Length: 180
Picture 1: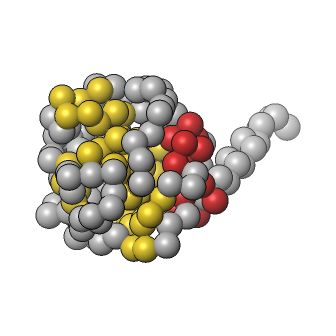
Picture 2: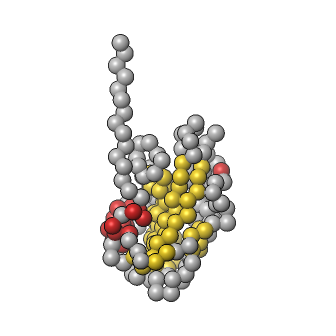
Picture 3: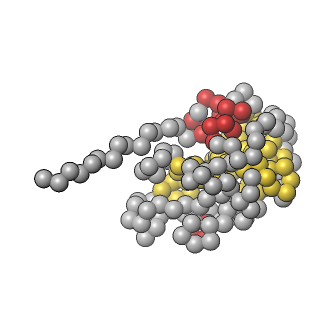
């Protein structure tokens, strides 16, 4: 009889919005002109892999915003972190399509990006295995009362820990993607 090793199940870690560090009292409306349920292929790693435009309503007392994109349907790492960005200036309520995959952005000025579960910095688009059912991608935005003292290239948990006690409002947009 052949020995078939069984892969241990991925450890379930809550999405950023469900973590204690990310609690906010108010809600933000998060939207994207290209995501209305399904995520277009151009935003996936099977195509161009460009980040979608993401916007949210303004919160006048916000000093900065943070964004975390996660896929809780991934099999190996749950949730799979696809994007971490923070120190988005309080005056900015839209990230344009196609942001550079750099640790520090000059447009919008001051934005820092961190590591994905893949180990790269910046946006890493959907890439579920072919044949998987649709994966759900949670674009989570956090309005903060401060800028975060976290170095560029940091991981999600470092950003979440720095956000603790500073979250004014939260919101999310969920898009799905499936590779046929």
